[in-house]
Image (tube, rainbow, N blue to C red):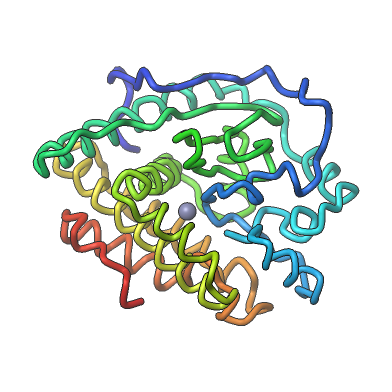
Length: 301
Ligand SMILES: [Zn+2]
């Protein structure tokens, strides 16, 4: 258990829980954050064989990641998307506590990156973190529970439905509060990438890339976000906030959400967008061991 109780939370939390709906439907792919350049934690479960049509859809820039229900998202098949959402549990009884936990972890990332940017002579502008239930509007399209947590560079916000944490525990086999913290730190890592120019460069470059090249570039971006999360986790340790088992929870999460693990070997590595379990653990650990974000250069991956 990371020590968070009684500590100050972030003032950058935007709590939109209980405001779901009101968006006039539209589960289609056009409104998915995937289509709007969002950067998601890879929480995909495989949807089975990826056919030619999906490849085409990927080509129009949708598949930054394999979503929780990738085929339904990628093909705009609402009929399989909606029932999946309905299988999610209703709001947790302890969601408010979870929201407080997220607030404290976000604050810790603000402290860490704020200090790091200062040492570089720069100023860190923290992202806002939107808690929602069901769906909400984002600068990258409609955010849905099934989208999984993601970062939207267009509005510099992280979006997360806290129900995801149930799924992380039960479906992906990654329990523990520091696994949850890792998810936040990874998305905040994407925000840092946005600030330092990595994301803008990637979004520009991928327009002229083949799909395979874009996938490889995506893996480099994702592994760097993992490495940034690791560097932040090390700071938590240095501050005496971690207890035994916390680091393992984060490493286990990185392991469980590797592309190879999530897809069960059903897609070739050339279609990976986030990296294998081994890579994800390796880069998280690299950030942790070095405690230095400049060691998170993934350009040779
Ligand atoms: Zn990511």
